[in-house]
Amino acid sequence: MAVDMRKIKKLIELIQSTGVAEIEIKEGEESVRITRESKAMPVYMASAPMPAAPAQQAPALEATPAAKAPAAPAENKHTVKAPMVGTVYLSATPGSKPFVEIGQTVKVGDVICLIEAMKMFNQIEADKGGVIVARMVDNGTPVEFNQPLFTIE
Image (cartoon, rainbow, N blue to C red; front, side):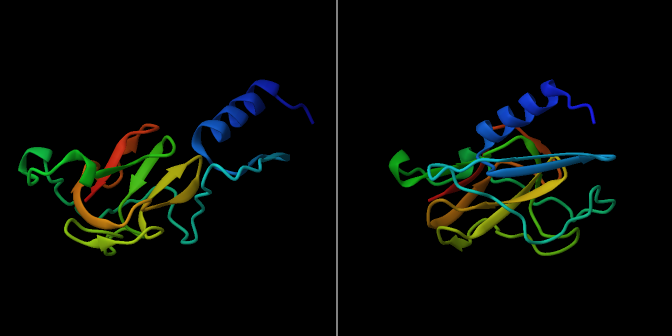
């Protein structure tokens, strides 16, 4: 079995930049599993299976522009950012109810969306309690590392 060290290096860089604690990749008979231990980074794992390429998606909810949000001191608002590069999904399955909606109150640890990265679905949780006042992404769209997803007030 020939191991491509460039691919392994890229996987290690992905894990370091995203906070994912473990990843396993299988290509034919080859298999690579990379695990890291870290108490500083949260682990996001999906528990609900998702289709690899949803054919039918629920219509995306409209994002609330920041200009329409009530004026408030910046210290009361918190932005939840993408911990990894991938595709964001606002509900567990196509056509189902979104995890959160604008105006909904969330607690720390509530799942607010999923990000698919390398065929793994990662639950993204609220890291602050409060009310969802804005959503900056649409269902099924790609997101970049550290891209704002939601604003919690």
